[in-house]
Amino acid sequence: MSSFEESGQLEVSIAAADTFTMLYRHTEEMAMPEGGSFTYRMFLMVKANGELFWVDNNSTIRDAGDYRGGPSETVYTWSDDDTRRGVIEPMVYSNVYTKDPEQISVNEVYGELFFGTVVLESVSDPALNLSTTWGNYPLCDLTSYTCTNDEVIALVDDPAENNESDLHVYAPYRTAGDLQLIWDYKPGNNNFEFLLLRSTSKALILSVQDEFNARDDGTQGTN
Image (cartoon, rainbow, N blue to C red):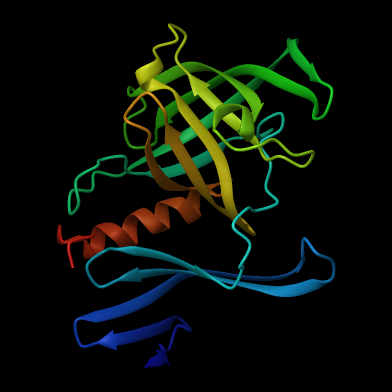
C-alpha cells in the first residue's frame, strides 16, 4: 500500500510496523548494454526503524560509473562498516582527492590510470581526519574475475604504510543523479564487503543522516 504525504513524499506500507518514506528519487534515460535505452527509476527509502533501501529497476549488476582519475571535487560519504547487525554508527566524511601528475600508469587496455592522495575528514568533528594514498585499478586486477576491455575502474584507498588490513577497494555500484551507491571491499579483513552512499551534495548526505537518526531504534537488519 502506498500514499503521498502533503509534502509530496511517497510512503510505502508493507505492514503496520513497516512504513517506508522516500528520501530521494531520480529518473533518467539510460543506455542498455545490448543496445537501446530504458527509463531508469530509482528511490532511496527509509524504514520506520532507520533501515535504508535503494530501490531501482536496473537489472544490470554493473553500473556505468567509473572512478578513473577520481572525483575532481569534494564528495561526501555516509557509511557504516560495523559488521554487527543492529549496530550502526554511521559517519559522514568529506573526501578531497588530489591527483599527482607524476604518478600516472599507462595500461595497454585501459589507458592512463592516475594516482595521488585522499583526505577524509569527519563533518561533525574535523579533528577526525585521515590522509591516505590512492590509485585507480581495473577491478578485475583486484578480484578473481576475468578482465574485459570495458572493466570498471576501482579506487583503491590504501594507508601510506600499506597496511593490508586497512585496504579499501571502492567501485560505483549504482549512480542515480547526485547520489552513488558504492561497493566497499576490504580484502585484508576477511574479504568484508559493505555499501555506502556518496554524493557531491553535502546537504543530501546530511539529510540522509538526519532521517536515519530520527528513526534509529537499533533493530536494523535483525527482522
